[in-house]
Image 1 (cartoon, rainbow, N blue to C red):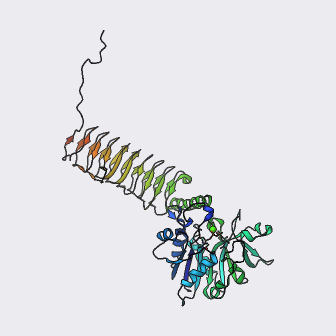
Image 2 (tube, rainbow, N blue to C red):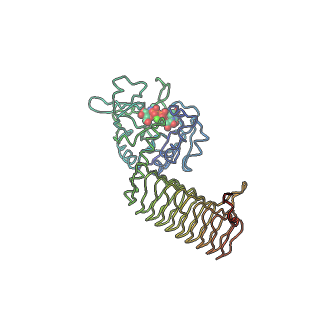
Image 3 (cartoon, rainbow, N blue to C red):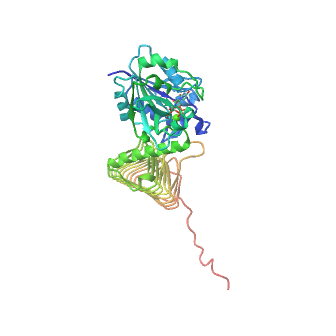
Length: 433
Ligand code: UD1
Ligand code: CA
């Protein structure tokens, strides 16, 4: 098999985004935009993975995978110029295929890249093209009367007639190294933008360019926030389809937001408006009720969450737990069968098995300077509207009376009452008549 080098171009500013931050670090479904191209390229297991950086390179470098070699393009003189820098950085002895991707095409799939690579056989280069509804902003594919590809014309140089062409350049190519050696450094910048266009290479290879046609939904180039939102919606849809095919039931996949690193076992039921992010793991039979937000957490088999619950990072629920409405948890673990059904905040806590934490319970885990933890052993009952001031431990089988402020450890099996005793003043409210 031919050796492969993948180059991802990430040096541009992304002016159409109208943001002060590089387009490459803008978040697209929990990942920086350029990570999608880089991750899919690295899934091909290339000999070399190069990322060309330039605009705000310090910030862009922070989001690159460790496996990527960075190449600096200090002036952004165009996509052709960017590839020149990468090609120079590639070891002289490298010969094989050079795949080029842009950092702003997050929807491309690995299978499509493999297909592109296969089509290079016997050609100087191969590229992905798409027919799109609205070709605005893309380079148009120019073919002769017999359908043979003869070049790419950028929107800014295109005639009105060429602008009507619906077949566009996806910005994903694979070249033979010897072809690049011959043509890459001969590119010129005689064009409207005075940039070195990578797309001019297509005309150099005319007659020996393979094209692979892919769906518009895979080649979208993200240039502004409307395209970023659209790309994110396509990625979400793919993720939801994947999990539904794995046996996860979603009442309304359109309003269900699941991140790329979430894993869900079959027979889980997810209600509308739910957001699940980070490396969250959900075991079989769980039910996530409407409008719950779950970040970087674990949810055990048969556990119920929500509606309107917020599991913040580090929440670990064992099997058959219940976290109910308007409950917020953070770095809190709950063993089998424990329940917090209403209106509570449980942070930095370890809760044992079969505990019942009443409505309105608040853990005071922060003293203004430091965080402290709370331990609740098996079988504890915490009455409603209690305040647990950390550090504190509630011993096995203990019981906290409703409305208590708990500042001291409670021994096992004890009843803790930490509230003012009620006083009834007999007859005090009788009218004087
Ligand atoms: C480019 C293509 C166009 C194609 C479209 C697909 C060229 C000349 N045009 O246009 O044919 O239809 O992508 O989405 O290639 N970059 C650098 N250094 C530079 C300039 C750009 O690294 O000097 C990077 C950018 O960060 C970006 C990518 O190259 O990741 C593409 O640049 P962009 O300006 O978005 O190109 P388009 O105008 O979209
Ligand atoms: Ca682009």
